[in-house]
Image 1 (tube, rainbow, N blue to C red):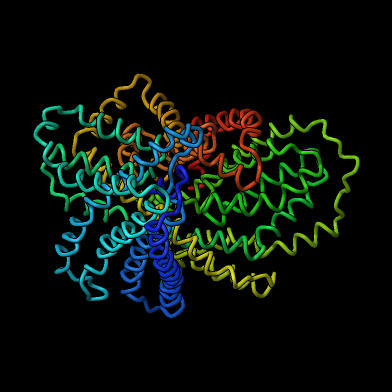
Image 2: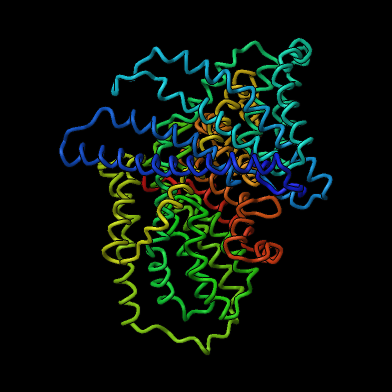
Length: 623
């Protein structure tokens, strides 16, 4: 569906395109406003729940149910907003380099795939709402339809956004052809069931390797690639009712722990807006700015600290790069090396809590979120040391004759100014460990803390940015939620097909036991992370591989740290890693300039990852 947002071959704005634009714009404005209100409502509900339970010792039994309902509405409306903004996660490395004809073909395929999925899933999602409408939620004592209704409403809204965009971005005959193709595919797909069933396990390759692979490489959003292949597999090869697919889709999105996703995304944006991130960077720069390669060490340390607050990698990089890059370039740093190190630190800090990937692991595998947050601190330090070794070697001959060393007074002043910001990661961790708030709720305390500090201490709070920040939060959360739902249904389909058992059997008999298993896992997650990013990979493969790791005697937190770091390396490794291109965009640097310099950093991180994999204590020593 995001393929509809990428700029296809330019077309003349016909009367149909103009009408489509007139219909789309007011709808999008209303959806953005509703999404912003829902994010703010989510924060208030969870914060009120924490205050009522901890301060007044009077738990509100309905807050979790209400927060879950608001979250699902937020997620599905956010998905529609993300479609309009072009923010559904997809791989564009190949399509961006394709010629006009091939690119137009991939845009056509992506648009058709998105509409096919929306067309076929809308009716089963309505039936699912009707099926559960008789069930009451115990806390609110209202029908569960309020929890499930976001599915058909969200799918319908995406259709209403996708079709006008087709006519605005493609010639009218092409747009009509896509709509007709989607309708025919949705109507006639079940007729091929008898023929596809005869292929047996070959269907797994057709639907979950070929269709998913072609879709991802063609730039189809990851969520749609997963959903279309799963839905097609179930319709064309099984007799499973589509209500089951929708049910699995809903279950994947409705985990309570996922409520933390929009809240931590918003917290990251708030950190940047209030100037807290800049104050931390200023303190680190005063400490190390006079050392050879000093600001590069500051970049590594700043990303570690900011990652511990925001949980959003894009927010992390956006907070640090503008504060450091101009001064680093003045000192002679090459832009290519800057974007390379920014990408490397993005991968290095993937395990720093409260990482969204760690939250997702806890959601789909049952591993303790508190244990993951504790275990994630030291592995990132190991990789940071490896990066600093490369920095030291690369900048050993840097000319520092014109750089003035900060005085103790200057260091003290920047330290005092940064103390409120430096305290936030510790406040978040303390609240979780002491039981004041759950991993889902603790972000609301962080939001309240950041707002107060921004208003009273730093006195930097741009009210005009609040609605855009809330809309951005809803958009990113919706894109993530759709991936989780699609990947959950896909993982269930793979499990029902027997694939998971076959995978377990194959990996259990690998020679070398847990050492070989760990090595194969590292390679697999580096590759998967470069193509699919962390969250969909974890949702898809976490439930399959984590139990195998446990049977082999690998601690679940140790395995989580290794897999997350491996995915991070893949995510930020060119030529496929989308994180690398995001870092280049944030740093306003040509990505081609960073491909050479990043290789030494990637090698250093691989060495650090091997150390983390070989020494379990690094991940589990403080549990």
